[in-house]
Image (cartoon, rainbow, N blue to C red; front, side, top):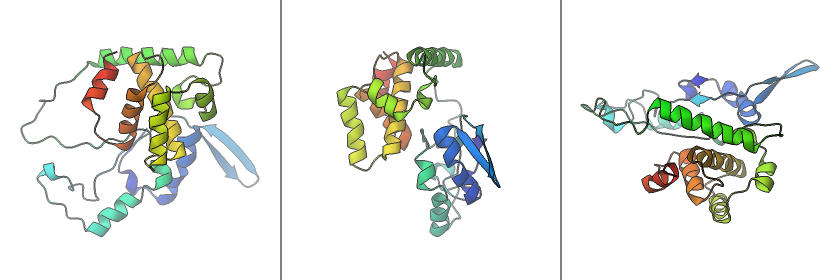
Length: 217
């Protein structure tokens, strides 16, 4: 599900996404009756850097927004929603003359095979459980039965202590580190996988040395 111009959605609609993003279901109450419906899906939230969309130096256009408008626009997606977003990436428009100059690392077929293999590893790991994928695994089960390496756990705890991550965010990074490991065929997520998951979540540039080490295994 792709929600474009997400900051322009009504505030109550944005806040209503907390439950499905967290639990994969949604409870609807009408009078004395309630019903819980499945709502687990991949959600892609897109936004511009500002209301006019030109607050990017490479566009060649001048931003017409006042600083207060940009601040209010970005504040509409508040902390509780941001905390439930696993991957954040900032995209830059291509520079004039770039065209198709960016060489693709892998073909779609190569990526499809890698993803299918990663999903099979998760299904095998969680055989006999109520869930099948890393994204569905409860935090307590991850800590007790599928922990990170000691060094990786230290890195994750350090991110929480420093304020870079909330407790909820650390669980989501733990899950994502397992997915990074599954994509690379690594038995247990280590520091490289956690660092990759942290960079994906925060929107920081991915370190090429770490990314190469993970994907080359």
